[in-house]
Length: 179
Image (cartoon, rainbow, N blue to C red; front, side, top):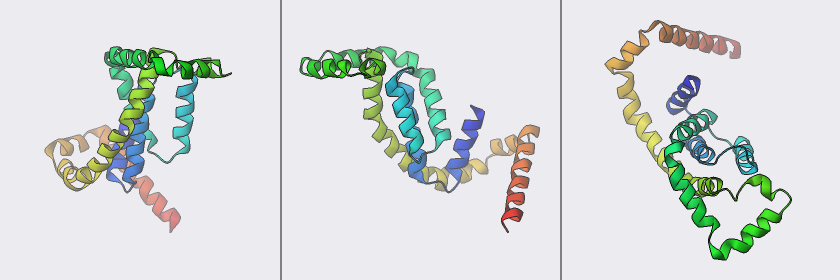
């Protein structure tokens, strides 16, 4: 988890495209809201791996969503129940369940249906929010954080200072190897 957090901060402060970071966050939200051990989650996960996004952000957001998910379960359950009991959709749900792989998707579980619907609906707003926030962070917040007393104290910690030195030596080794 600490490694994912560090990689997210590195991505925030590096030249990685805003859309890749935002996509990672949005996919993490979607995968976090859909319960695991079903074909829908596996398909979404495999799709997310084929796209260019920040996987550290995806893992971080997915872990955070899974932590708060127990508080969201009643809402997701109600949403899933609402979707699965709509009279005009009953024929669609029946046809979907009768497909050879239909039962393995567990779409008829209220938590799966509600989590999938909420994740799909929230995917684009989170993508746009993170994409809009990154320039603000990179231009305004990052310099202030880097110059803060707290960051100066954190850099003086033995573990952090050794990590910084290791990162600088690896960077200089890479530059020598490339040149």
